[in-house]
Amino acid sequence: MPSRMCINPNHNNKGILHKVDNVTAEERWAASSCTMDSLYDIDLISETVPVILDNSDAWHLILSTSMKLGDRGVAHVEGLTRVDLKEDSHYSNLLLINRTASPLSWFAECKDRKNRSAIILPYSFLPSMAAEKLRIAADQIKRVLGDYDAIHVRRGDKIKTRKDRYGVKRSLHPHLDRDTRAEFILHRIQKWVPSGRTLFIASNERTPGFFSPLSVR
Image (tube, rainbow, N blue to C red; front, top):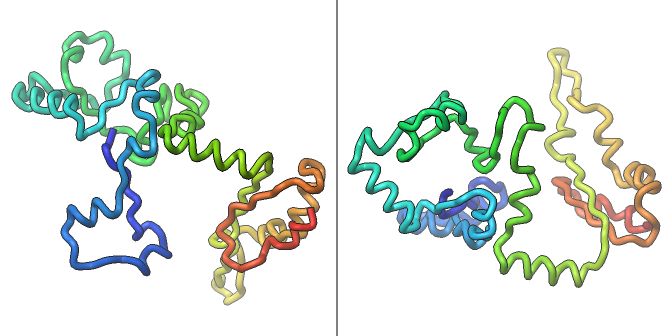
């Protein structure tokens, strides 16, 4: 597993305003990344799937040994199945490199990548493996907040309009603007969210106070 995770501000439009120039590549990487073990409990993850960070002594030992052995120490196994690797003893003592996995799903352990129901590790696995300090902080926050309901409302990019070939403005989701307004949400949630509950809204809507009408709940 990579020892650091990228948090580059260039991936966030607001972060571009705080971009700093005249720094070395190492300094830029240090400022735009954080250590993986500050986010995840590596030992806890390893109880389910053994994990070796790429800056650990174990990884350097494996890598240096494999480089010394050359073809006898490393094998590229793109296209081979788990059954192939298990049945062929040639691969048992080699460093296996498989570059077929999507870099966006670097921790999804799959039996069939075309069938999401075949994923061995659920999507909830990593969030439950947070580092100890983060778990402690989360518990403290939960005690302060108490019980609450949360809704994710995606608007911004989804309600943008574009002119068609006749110059008429059209939206890919014509009813989304209406369906994601506070008044409509209030009507939709009345069956599930009792009055007086604490309600959190996660949204990319940039208009201040857009969801304020929900406060009547």
